Length: 135
Image 1 (cartoon, one colour):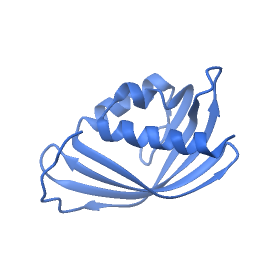
Image 2 (cartoon, one colour):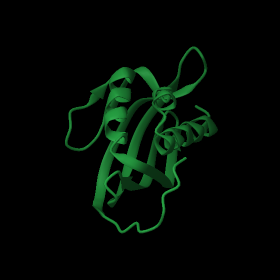
Image 3 (cartoon, rainbow, N blue to C red):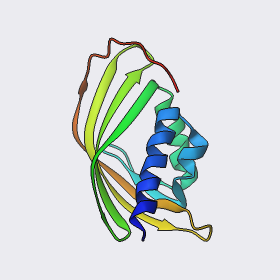
Image 4 (cartoon, rainbow, N blue to C red):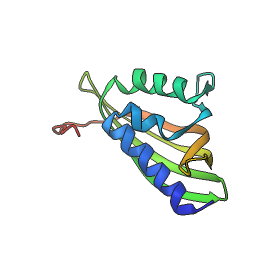
């Protein structure tokens, strides 16, 4: 698998999260993908992933993911990520963790997640006193 296709997929995912774009988010997943996060059952299928994204992302005015480091090995990849979240109630939080991915391309040649597992290393409140400019 071309590493640049995988990096582009991760960039598309981060952009969809930033813009709260459920359609773009859904296009990052294969139809039968599995998305795993701490504290919840695996989410199976693109439609279910989009439904969870819509509910979860709606709690935030802004959510920015920074990819800190990544390793790609064929169709597997691992990314360290920091996520800063501005909640609708004015509070802020930060996550630090890692994504463990399996990717593939469909008949259309687009690289998508087949599996995406998030491992949480840190979660906490963060002061975000500045002004939010929503995308």
